[in-house]
Image (cartoon, rainbow, N blue to C red; front, side, top):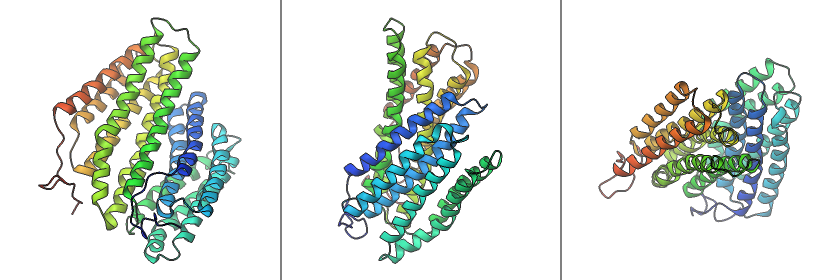
Length: 388
């Protein structure tokens, strides 16, 4: 344990190299989910992919909370993280067949990853009664949720789906009870860690665009198509990092006590999940856009792009409102417009559809710079104030 511990030292630290290394396994895991969605023969490939992303996101989020509390400088913590990383890599390998023959392998590794995080948090908090009490608001239901996924992995359909969905639902309920505890959170570190995961998801869209373009000849059609797909990815980055993330972090740093833990839960652990899903959905669609720009946009890819972009925008609206009580109306309008396009744009080519989405995002971002955001949380000196 080190002085960077948020309770003992109270200092604000940056993400460590071991945490960045740990995140690399989730780069591979997200790539596996994108491949799963492309190859899923079911009627609902996006729903199945979103569910797998929930399980993966939940494991990553638990470790983000754990290392935020413990720091990462000691040898024992680094060995613990490397062990968890190795098991997570094995879990990611099972993603393509998680609902088939690989369900047992996925469930076992998922359970081990969850137990490792919980066990380490328990040990780290032995000298901190308030943190152990906060841990107990969350752990019992969280353990049962992970156990349901473990058992479900050994069962055939439909019981596998029933237990896995039940476990996910119980996880969501557990975070509601977690709000009763007073969690020690290093706000700067926690915000940075979540922002880095957003970068991981955005990176998948760049990789998807590049891989699809690599197999095609550079011609007057491919070059602008790659450019338009990149503009959408860049607009999603801008939507998060230009205003949303700074507003959230500013308010986060101003909080204390229970509100700090609740904000970490609400704005980051909960609302970053649909945000990441939306970015990954766009990554799924971007590959199809670059590979077939002049063909009518395939139904699944069209839905992935419209739903994905809308999820990103709506998630950011909620995060901004939780931070500032400002309603980003332009983003709500843009989300509605993109979903309407997905519904009515079935005859558009992939390139034309993406061009319209890019235009909607650029107009939205431009309008936000013309009309400054206001905040119901700001004091006369301009500092963000905690919710009463």
